[in-house]
Length: 327
Image 1 (cartoon, rainbow, N blue to C red):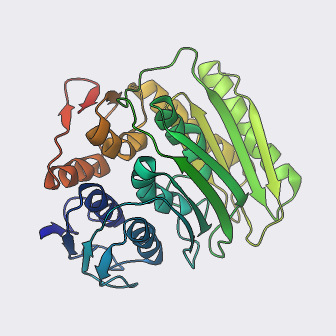
Image 2 (image 1 turned 90 degrees about the vertical axis):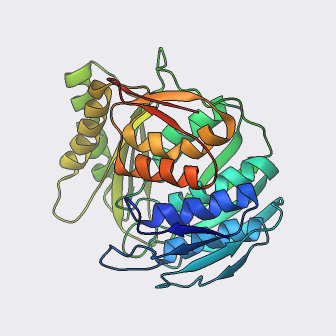
């Protein structure tokens, strides 16, 4: 049985989520030890448990240690199969990260999943980033994937609900080049807040992008009355994106400007993908081949490359100037 050190390098939930995904893809039993051992809250959180459940139910896996707070997990996969799932994270934990764990298996066999939790959560991609930055790269390689956000969920109450459906596909190499002209846009969302909050976020983001880069990005406003209260702004240009979340006391204009500034920095830094997308695409690069460039190598990218090596995949990262990632 393969043993994975859950505290290695970045040492976060990424190792848990993607280790079970790779185990399911390879059919190889494994155990994860010292889960999040270097974090203030060690062990599995609710969103990690939900992600493992999603993968386990798709391949009839046997699990031991699958509980909130557990610092060790064994995962013995069966044969992946097409299935329809419904999961509730139980908190405002990230729906996006659960979907990213499940998706590589679903692309092989098809299926659908409904996940309830947080759609805009700190330290994870917003659901709009998934739709406008991450998924277009997989669709361009042949993935048939639909995403519907029925409800938005913000910290601390959550309450978001997202449905993803996937047709079985064999992807082409996931090669991401700088698009000309690139797809671009701004999605400004709010829940239980006055309509002007989303409008002010979008206006500030659009103004900053125009002033700094000459970009006139189209705007989508998504204003809802949901269980939770919050706001977000997601901006994208090609395979690069940036997000910012609202909070009490932070002016809406600052939210929009922060999102825009993150994208401006990513564009000026070079590369065909942003540094976050770089590590999110690695599992597909390992499976199907391909190449892309990024401005730098993050700890998440290093961790994912190391984890892929444990399962027999080789990722080449060329650090000569702009970073080239290839498989």
